Image (cartoon, rainbow, N blue to C red; front, top):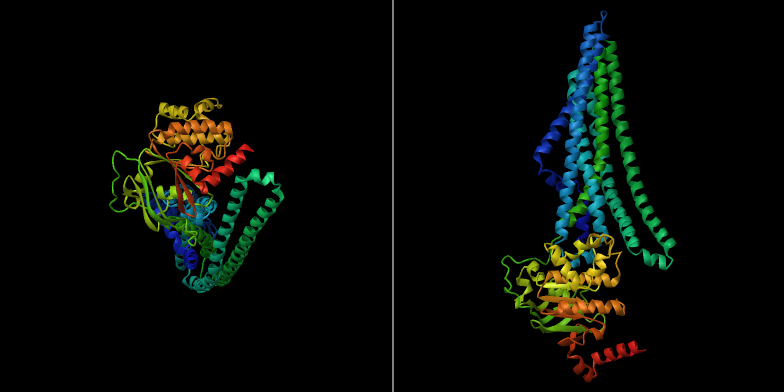
Length: 595
């Protein structure tokens, strides 16, 4: 997505993007066959109506002796056609709508499946809110395309072609005159089509901007209101909406002009041909029924080709949406399992080693996050990592979990280079308690068992008790089944952290990563969380990142980082006596706490 923008933009303007939709729909050949059968039947019934009117006029009104039986038979024929048309249209609608819903559901699943394999770098370069818009707004356009537009276009194409065949059967001369005008229609289609295609893509981009704005503001509503920025955000949203409207207005104006030109050309040609036909009727070369059938069929053919010009614009818009979806499906994970992954030792040892690691974030290649860093964490050891912001502490966790690969050196888990192992197996050796706990919009029970989805109710409650979370969970309105709201809106910061600890307990992994797990808590909450952490850390290899130095005094080792390097290493007592960076950080914190 972020690479080769010119190529991406060029490809997004190609109607060939709809191959994505056709491939997904082709998995259901029986449904497609049913849709095509009833589509052909409805088109045939539509074209049979002019013939029915021809029979009515010629038999009932074409001679001196009007036959009541002939009129009745002709109208019975018409009623039969109407019945067939109604039934065929209903079945066509069902099959085509089913295909649209099913195809888009499959595409959404494929996109989501691929997104789950992509590394954090992808989501740094592509806004999640924009991705969400593609999964909703763009796929809705594809659903309309499969469930309506494509069927509508195909039906009009069949009706138009079939109508032309019938016109030749009625009067080759008049039909030939009508066909002379058709090539003039393709010029406007090509001319306007390219511009409509470009504007369709731009329109979808502007709609994505609207979704991004809404998501951003709603997610930060407390900040918006706390700083009194409601009016500014209203104006900013209005500007985004207006940009989307202006782009859509250009597209609609162009399509309207395109429709006017095409319909004027086609129906103008029909009028001229009918004029000639009227002369033939007056001269006795055609019957009244034949000219009526010709006019009726000509209107059907004209309407069919006029509608095709509109559906072409819809297909171009859908092509732009399909191109954006294809970009998500085509994105490849840089971090993936090798062809023959090395197995990690079983049972797990619980060791974590960094050997002369060099690393730069792909989005910030000019800055070294880690430089020539070596660190060995032994099984069962607790190592605390401290240092100023930007020192590279969290980068250690990113590499350990193999969200990124280092540009130099190695990261080993239980003695195996993580690049040689399956990433899922490597991550299975870790339990993570992040600084900012993620609470899903689900029940407390489901949030807890995210650590191990097949855990029993008893295991989940035991983990909650060990994390000091059981008491507040049973006090919720529906206990463990209480819906926690988006982001855990019904919980305090300390409660969210204890749920994260319970998850890690359920994970029961040999390596534990704690990232600022108590940094945002008050003293009482911190004490409860710290007690739960101590239970969690027993018998596990633990790496702790902490700004609050009081939480790392009991660590076996303290590693001090600065500018991507390890500058000091030792116990709290030895580092304090050394008078280096750690001693300075400790003095500042403890003096601040005393004040």
